[in-house]
Length: 367
Image (cartoon, rainbow, N blue to C red; front, side, top):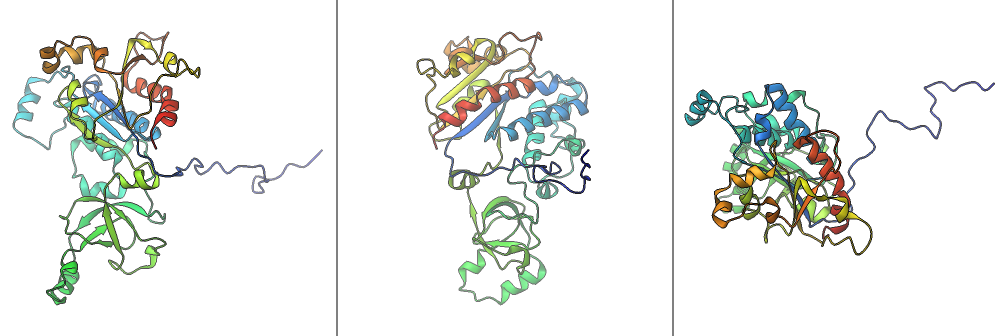
């Protein structure tokens, strides 16, 4: 009988599962984007602050896992505000919990907070009742949520006020040194702050690009000069997934018409149990696989009553005579044919939909 090896002596075949191994590895620049749109009214359907916060956290996890670049929270006309809470909102009481009075705002607030790297949250988000329970949510742990001992050429940071010592040094510089006058100090989560060659208002979130092979952990504060770049550059140039942007839309139609991407969305999916099975579009047969390549994909999910009520509540669509939501999208799909439950909740549909369309994203997105 062979003696069992002690746990402290792992063999070559043993795996260390104490740390995650599925780390994001960029594989070249990525030009395409994936956007998700959903109504904030789903927050109103959750009864307690705890459930509302948990719901926002579930959505944020799905966005992070599937590398969604943009989330749009739209008004589908289903948010029912209580009279006293509506009055409080009209008085611009920004310190009140908005999970009941303004579900759209609450969802955007939570999604923005969770996307922000943890070390920046205290600097960018003042204490607010909306965020009281956010600390109990699972971490998104996205590539730009870097630790202080992790190296990446790109980092998120926030501009900070210069210390009295820095201001004194500035006074002693030559008056004709225009470049020195335009420097800003940025906290990027490292032991040392970095400088960027631009005059940026303090408490502004910026994406910075550090010099290659910089030993920033052992460098004097402010002596490294980084570049302030567009938030899309880590994705476009290096292929990093760099979090998601959050956008508000006043209706389901403005989700599409107010796109921030040049040329708008060139591939759109509307989701409904009354749509065509998603498998009909994603079959491997060449004659069935008709989905074109895309630069900017949009997937729109409905609330408790579906996208039909969002279309009914949209004044612009009513003026145009649009009554069927399927007329708004390139594809009108059923994500879960033969569902066993009477309803598929929006937070569940997001996971199902992004899973079903994953192969489409990976194979049809223009690099």
